Amino acid sequence: MPTTDHDRWMSVCLSAAEEAARTGDFPNGACVVAGQHMLAVSGSEAASGSDPTAHAEVSALRNAGRSGRLSPGATLFTTLEPCAMCLHSAVVAGVREIVFACKRSDVGDAAYISNLDATAMTEHLLQPLVLTHHGDPKGRIAKLIKTFLNQDWH
Image 1: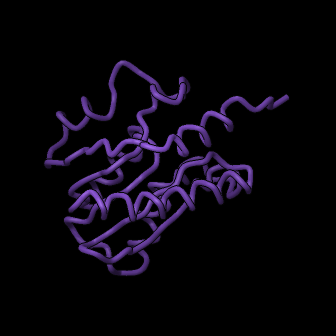
Image 2: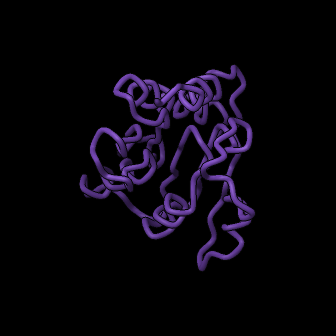
């Protein structure tokens, strides 16, 4: 998939992340794409929906599955490097590639940083999965996430 397509889908993810932030949820967005068709898009819903598993990636995969259009070989775009749960959900769904904008270490998301990052995890999967670091050239995604993480929650 050409980089211009990556820019297009990452823009969709950013809009979903901004909407999640407006509702008080973690500012992450994801979309599932097959060919040139978006199957589903979602922002994080873990806080607003009282479902701790409703990360943007998992919610987008669930929505794509419910639509009946999710098929092996789809691409998952996300604004943030996926956690272990999201990575494995993508594998179970038959996703071929995950394209992400920001690495967790780039935004100071210490709650999810471990000694096993997403790239290392893919080496232990039973089926091949390509992880592509798209980057955040304008810094908009990193700024949105850092602003959220720096809020005073008291």
